[in-house]
Amino acid sequence: MDPVYRTVIGIARTVFAAQGLKFDVEGAENIPARGGAVIAINHTGYLDFTYAGLPARKHKRYIRFMAKKEVFDNPKSGPIMRSLKHIAVDRAAGAESYRAAVDALSRGELVGVYPEATISRSFEIKEFKSGAARMAIEAGVPVIPVVIWGAQRVWTKGYPKKLGRTKTPISIAVGEPIPPTMSAGDLTAHLRSTMQTMLADVQKNYDHPAGEYWVPARLGGSAPTLEEADKLDAVDLEARMAARDERKRASD
Image 1 (spheres, rainbow, N blue to C red):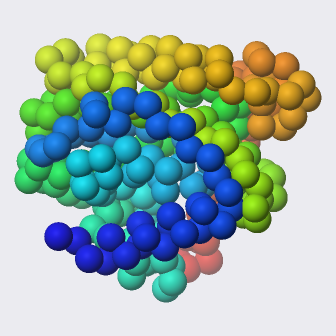
Image 2 (image 1 turned 45 degrees about the vertical axis):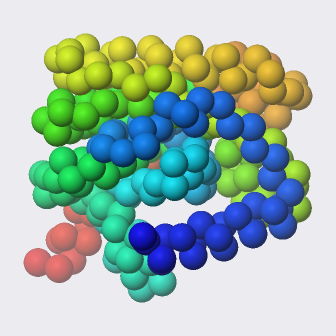
Image 3 (image 1 turned 180 degrees about the horizontal axis):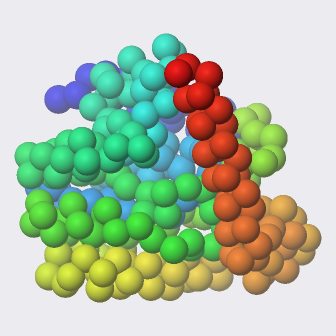
């Protein structure tokens, strides 16, 4: 039993209903009824995690998401994140969060991970970090690929959030578990390829108006290409690093 998490899910479902969100979930049976698993999710919007947890409810299970430390440091969101037993990630020192994730997996938990690490501005599948594969191998649990499409229409990087009654369709597909029987590099590459295929399949049944900001360039939208998005991310990273260095100098 997890009364706090159950309450939060109840509130979230009420919000989803008020927004008129239309969910199409496929493959929920691929979430194991028991035992640990890495839930690998593509990242297109700030609310991906609230949607990614829906398939796990088929077996009344909860996902412990890995999220950046700043969310836990926030006086409003921090207590909630800790009560839901999510896992804080310090990007400057990730060993502790990695160990916490492996321990949770070994205890039979579902751990939610974004292998892309950051939101994809192109809405394509970015290059993956190897953490999801490495923790699955160390804990001896499968990786379950999950793709979400439509979340970027609700709230994504660089655009105003749309939290009213938008009646936005959101598609969620859960792939078959991938056993941790490869090297970390091979498992990472296989996971990314699988999720690219899954995303393309989900997109086939989704309406993509030409020129829309949330539609990938490949499908006729105005979103940047993957290469253009990578350049934008590099500029952002450089700015964040400069700001961090400035704060450090100011505190010395």
